[in-house]
Length: 327
Image (cartoon, rainbow, N blue to C red; front, side, top):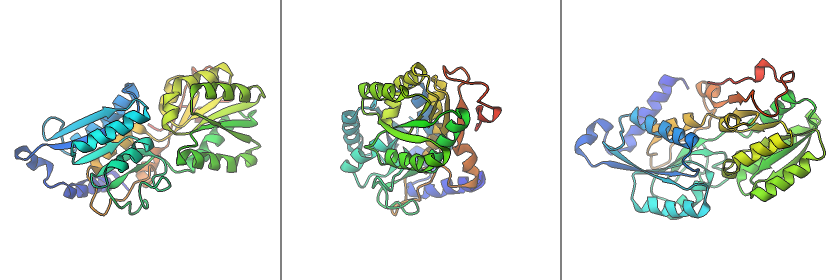
């Protein structure tokens, strides 16, 4: 889908609102609930700003014809549940959810308020929607990435550090996406001569102990898969990779810009901005969009960033091909 076609899709979604934006001035102010799972740091603030920009481009301005109610959960499960109830009680026209862990609490308290999600890797497997083509119910949004992208992480790690013969995959086994990502990596590993093991990211003590144990056997590397807990433990995981001299690849750019070696994944701000265009889904459910569901979006969906100043950076092994690209 080219940009002009995407604009047509956005324009078509306007029918889901009772009145077009230009006619809102004399009508009531619409309300959007926003549930942000992470803490309000620079990355998450930038992502939220992209969402607001997506709304603004279609004529919806916070404080003018729409009011945005934002709640930051800071990675706390109890806070997510609390704010899910709080936002639904505000009777918003739509709720924007920023990740997988936000969805179940929201769906526990409403099946009528429209929900638009981003950063959800497997909404079908998690039971949030019926299918990508026809989500059904009150939910639609943008799929984080295809599971096949997980294989690229292992391939890149092997290219960057050819001596790696074993890889620890850090994942959250409580999230369906974590299981799926690990399965893809595990299936590819034998063809690259790599043994794969899983490390859970439940708590800091567990991560420290398991990474240290893994690193002691040598020739290792790390892959961090997508999850809310990965973001919570970002600084710890990056520090452990440096401490044990383990080449590591991350699913998101912010890990590379925070000191990690390399990242390969979707562009967070792009999904947030496009979510601002979906707004309220049709009653039968608007098609859920994959991060690479269109030709034009494939280029932007695969964003690679390398930190040349990382504690582990073998310049003889890292070629120009692995330098930052995708913008």
